[in-house]
Image (cartoon, rainbow, N blue to C red; front, side):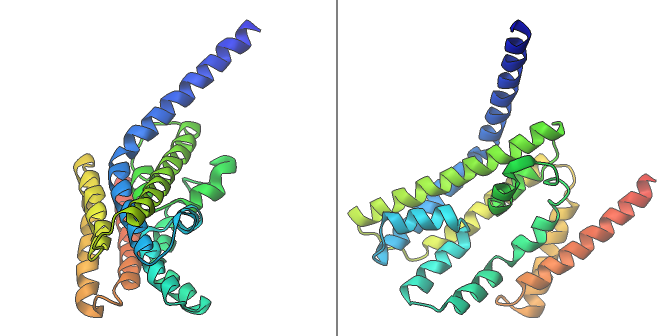
Length: 242
């Protein structure tokens, strides 16, 4: 009995340590998500929708940029085909960076379906970073980060609707918060890692494709070029290590 109690205390201590680490890591995302999702809720309220709609969209859609786009699609009674095609175009990047998590999420346990669903840009930036955790700790860390970030988004979206219903706001330009949040996360990643080559590849690929394909069509070509460039970089570095 005593051995079991000691073992349970050690397990509990390890879990609490991982939860704390995930919470601390998610704080920058919390600051961005609360502001951003509050803006989404206010925008939704300006179209005449209430708390239930905001809660449902944030729980089941949970895709920042797509939720902003979905507000107008819903308000204008867009067809399911239009919604589906728009979603694919807006969130195509998830297909590309999700591929890079296949190995890391391979043995994460029963939480895998939810973790795949909750892999937003900001969550990805946290779970893909280098770490010194063992496989079980890392799996739990990824799950807790995903849950924390999701809760931040849900909380802000509901709060935003309530604010929008009580106080009228001019919501023009409020969706720029998405860009601001991305810059914040990207800056944090730049300062915390010594290897800046992936970030440089991403920036150069984006600018090149923006110039060639234009602002409406550059996203998917950018992702393709980035994947190829990162794969080549991995091969080169692998040969050097060998």
